[in-house]
Image 1 (cartoon, rainbow, N blue to C red):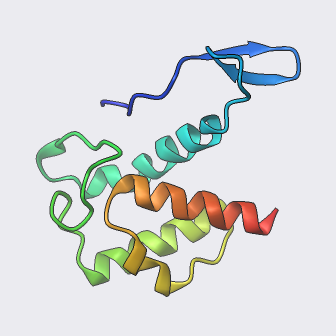
Image 2 (tube, rainbow, N blue to C red; image 1 turned 120 degrees about the vertical axis):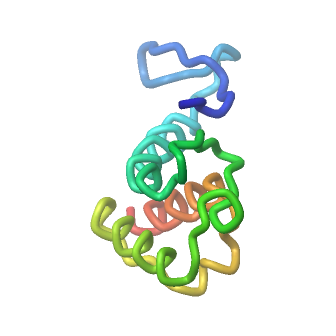
Length: 108
């Protein structure tokens, strides 16, 4: 499994920081990516690699029915309600991660 290139993290007093000393907002992004991979991995044909740039429709053959199943699994996994209208903004795995992150932030 290839994980997208995020800056290396350093744990320090007061949180997690990237190598530039900036607080790392990507950590939650990385964790979400890994959790969403668990949901998407069974959909990958011939166990092809899933990256942040993987196209849900073209690479994973996710049609509208599978997309609804994925949304239900995401709702269960993260205890959120995913509006169907976000699907128009989701093409890649990274798009999905960003939308889930946004929904989680709105619920916080």
